[in-house]
Amino acid sequence: MQANDRPGGNRIVSIDRMRGFSLLGIFLVNMISFHSPFFYIDPGTWWDGTSSRITYKLIDLFVQASFYPLFAMLFGYGLVILRERTLDKGMPFYPIAFRRLSILLSFGIVHAFLIWSGDILITYAICGFVFLFFIDWGAKRLLFAGLALYIIPNLLLLMMLTLSLLAEPNASFSIYDREAAEQAIEIYQTGSFMEITEQRIKEWDEHHNIPGLLFYLITILPLFLIGAAAAKWRLFENVSSKKQGMASFAVVMAAAGLLLKVIPYLTVRNIVTDYAQDTFGGPLLSVSYALWIALASENRKMDRLFAPLEAAGRLSISHYLFQSVFSTMIFYSYGLGYFGKVSLFEGTMLAIGIYTIQLAASGLWVRRFFYGPVEWLWRSGTYMKKQPLKRGGRI
Image (cartoon, rainbow, N blue to C red; front, top):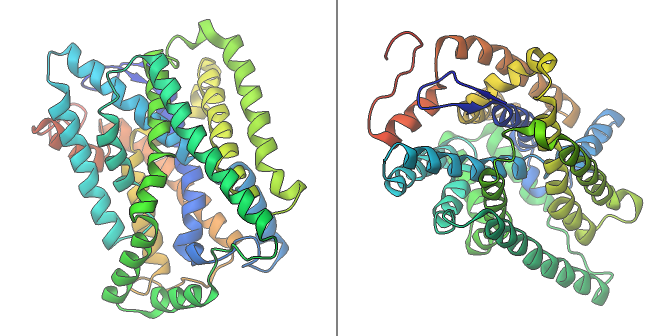
């Protein structure tokens, strides 16, 4: 399903709806580290109270590691669409793509070091630069490479973790650090802006060093390739001709994903089952989410229900950054200073409330403007020309 409602060509509305849906899942997970020292704690035991424990289990099963893969696949899908439309206009693709990724990298640097250390934009930009070496490949080659690059290294890592656990069954493989968690609470709750910035840089460096970058190259980059393969097959265009196959595949992916997701609860929770749950269960579930949205988008009766998601998806980067700015102003010392003071349930309800407001605001925005504010800056920089923003005029 497509809509011809903005300069530069048609939009695939199911893609926008997937992005809008992804914003909620990403926010629910990010909110945990906005209000608590998520990098250093066991979220299954950190909070007291039945409501928070149930909330964590629901997020762990249906959200955690199931929305960033969807966003990553859509990123690869979008870069292929950008390439095709750029070449159709007789424009050089690689200079445009390089500027686009460079601007995204600059957004990410500001976001990571001045707003929130959990930034994903830097990772997307770096993986995007690498992805440009593969973007000319055909769909089958992209899919095979993406699956191989994802499955083989991660299976080997899973086997290594299993062997380590079997060799030393009583050893602690915990990544949690209560002392570091308490220090983070003190800094974010009462520290100066400079102290918070130093903490942000420390946390970012802990997860984005050389081993971290290599990890992203076997988790994020392959998803770009898989998304690109879907784009070259035009998977989300002319869905009506593929309904039966897509519906069957969506059921299989959902069942397989949930089966892997529930393993730590059916067996024992340890580093092996957690890794299998997130690394393999999460992406399978995300594929099912994408397919269900694509299929539902073929039903015109769903348009009114999906309209807010579609609008939010057009402003995805603006909303992602706003979520970080607004949330850190609530929880960091230079705002209200509530870091470490709310339960997981309370934080989740706050995220849902903010997201609901974003949905409503998105509808109002897209009636007047073609792009979100950050998307407009991004597009203008990409094409080195101020783009039309306001409908019916130029700003």
